[in-house]
Length: 394
Ligand SMILES: *Cc1c(COP(=O)(O)O)cnc(C)c1O
Image (cartoon, rainbow, N blue to C red; front, side, top):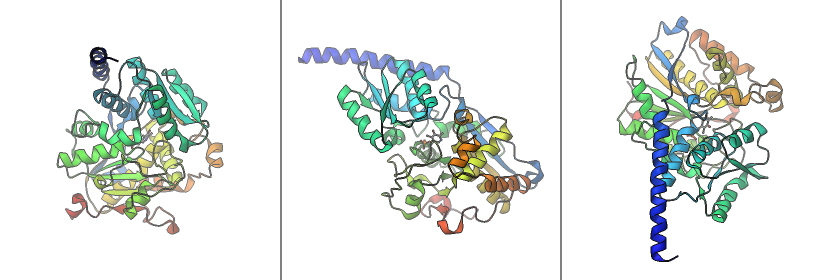
């Protein structure tokens, strides 16, 4: 291509990119912020100790999960870096909520979208991605997804969004109504507007990175707790300080827990990690679904288990304050799995013992001293270098 032809093509792309960025801006403006719900803790014990729990309801995004924020950020990042133009095929390695949300933004911009996923992905999820205009490309083993996404990007001259690498850098952590800024803004008129704890899980690690950075940037006294399921590399890596932990086993809690430590997980902004048994996550998802009168996803169960434990700790120490966690996605996507007894049995997941712990917490505000089996090592690790922990006692 001659220099003048190249420059003509660039200016054509520039005006397309301008209009694409405007389209995403207009879509954002038409969208409402997600609610911060107050979780009804029982008055039987909260009359003695002034604690409250809030749920940031990320299910109300148009694509149904917190991945809507990530997908928007990844597209803007790709557009403004000059990686996406009107001829770009957009590619991601994801069988889950990320692909659903990205397919939405690809359709908004009129770009082809390919989700690379394992052949074992459920028909429901494939349908959800295809109904947003996405195409599904299958590999036999989930470990092949990343290389295959890269290969497709090279072959089509497309762009691999790469959520696990780019989640932490694509998000505006200082503000721009990111999830952290929105939470603090919405707490403005509450009794305890600066929460003691914010509790989140980590999939890419992007949400915890954004919240942890924002807390420091705004000099808030809030601490960040990351809850992690079984089989995940994040917790053992945090506990040992080694970034090269690989479990090689997939998490059973959809959306969180990874077989390797992903580049978007930033341990230094995390004040504490709790390892949550999978059966406890399921029990908590069932419990909250009953309390709220609608089904929540399993990673919300993990969040709630951690939030309850921290609230019980505050109550035991007579400390008042608030705790915030996320309703990450709806349970409607999981009728055949986490809300199906046969499936739970087939997975060896028995939530009954954990359900007793939750019932006791609701009754008394108390938590058993150790909720983890004795032989499984630590399940609660604090970042001793964190300023927030060094500042205590309060
Ligand atoms: C992705 C995801 C998470 C974790 O969020 P990250 O920002 O990727 O760490 C939690 N729950 C659900 C349902 C998710 O899809």
